[in-house]
Image (cartoon, rainbow, N blue to C red; front, side, top):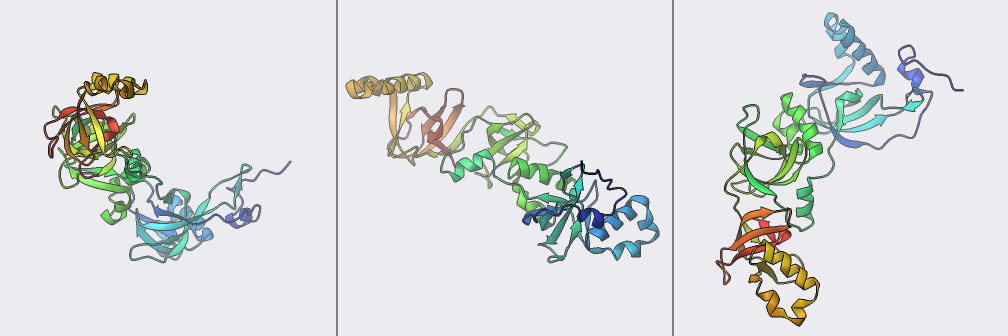
Length: 330
């Protein structure tokens, strides 16, 4: 049976000799201060980190600050971009764990600085945009559920839309620590004033994905707290009829019930045997790209109520498939 090791007794170099798995690839990320701090010390190496953290923990750093400075390669603001490579060489309780990150600062005045930080002081760059942003990248229109306004949370006049849920989990603590705007930028989709009109796209228990539907940031997609949203009486959103496939025109049905009945008849092939029966349920055919205004959203039925506002079909009102309306700016 392999022996068990006690990291509190064995030194970091001795433990490192026990297991040396293949080096991990460098990952993009950022340096994060512990607690409410605003700066991160990058130690010269793993030995210096171990000694420096001990000095910070037992108060020796206050008695001999010069000795601590000699262990540090550089000190950077929380949120500073860096490349990190996990040090998995230490085996604890028979499982490989990250004991340190070997990092290189990639931005700011200390760019190029190399050293070692504790696991809590390095965060990986968030992966993946919001679900709505993915839909936009795939050429699909984000499907709005309802329209409302952003309201202040904790008295903030400006509200941050985070680029993704992962970005919010990283960026929000940085913002509370007072990180510089340049360090927050990779995690922010946009910042808008309270009162900005948005459409909700996807809901979570505490946060939701939204798209800005008015103002200079129209089309911005991000993630915000549910508590910062209030539904509006006015559910209208300007946009256009979206291309849902190869068709050059989109069916605008008289109302949601007519749409559902029309789809049932089309599936049964009635549009071939008795096209007049299907056409009687329609308000018009709208060309893709036609300027339109959505007036109500019904995600449960998969439809959006619209009014064509320009062109030869101007004034036509009815219901289109949920993905057949694209908000302006997207």
